Image 1 (tube, helix red, strand yellow):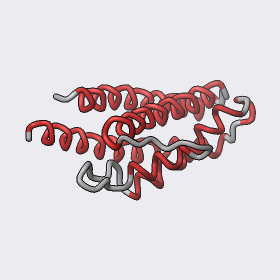
Image 2 (cartoon, one colour):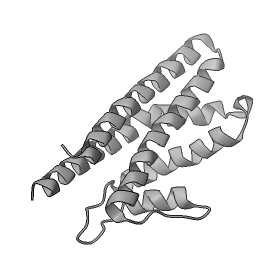
Image 3 (cartoon, one colour):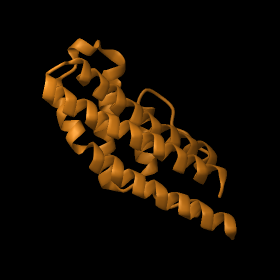
Image 4 (cartoon, one colour):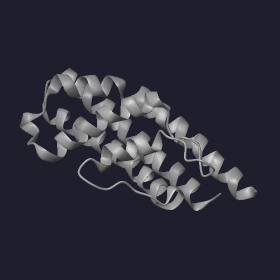
Length: 155
């Protein structure tokens, strides 16, 4: 298995753990009303998104040979991954995944730049409720991309 394909598989395992921890923290918050669980859910969501973004950065650097720069490079990176790069690679993620991940990208920015007592609990709940679906779809697309990498390496 190629190193990048291995990295994708390994990172997806960690992302899955982060999503499960997110869901568990949210369930405990709903049960106890202890806002420390909201913090845990937020940090795990941020961690899961960061894992996806790390993979996208590697793909942009090693496969595309072009990584976005500038103030909105995070958003540009998502858009780059949703586009096919002629003769190099297919789109890594679908338009639906791009849209779903963009919500987590924006949330990641909030987690990094505000104090946890300023988190919007309702918004976090919405993101938690969609997390398994969004990250599950992205994981499936990344696994398909890993298969593409393997097939390309065999030829």
